[in-house]
Image (tube, rainbow, N blue to C red; front, top):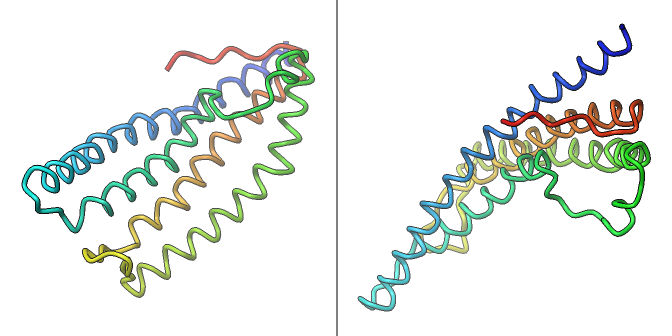
Length: 182
């Protein structure tokens, strides 16, 4: 009975950790609205009224960058990242999980720790100096955009921990644990 308990504990904990990715993914999805609106405003202002904005391009690329980075944990939770399915799909779940587990420890986690550490440094530097985008006539502050880097990294690390737990259970059972509907 104890063997079943640790598997259930890992599966339950993975589901709890999933909630961070799901919550952030649903929240970040709303960034599409101001991004599309600012882009549409720019098109109308530029081509209908002949008065382009100085801020719409910057707003669009900052929102898209935030959307892309902050949505990565949600994409990982949903299994949406790229892998070589022509090989991977033919393997037994135990083999898939073992390869995934090695990948999480050898590539994923170390690179994400560097990403979070470096991103935090970029954020602190931008915040302390009130850095602005010099390539833009609008010159918005940089620190909110830079803060997205370590936050995205932490969200990915949390989701990565959930995926590692699923790999451990899959290696033991030779089947992937069920993902609970969220």
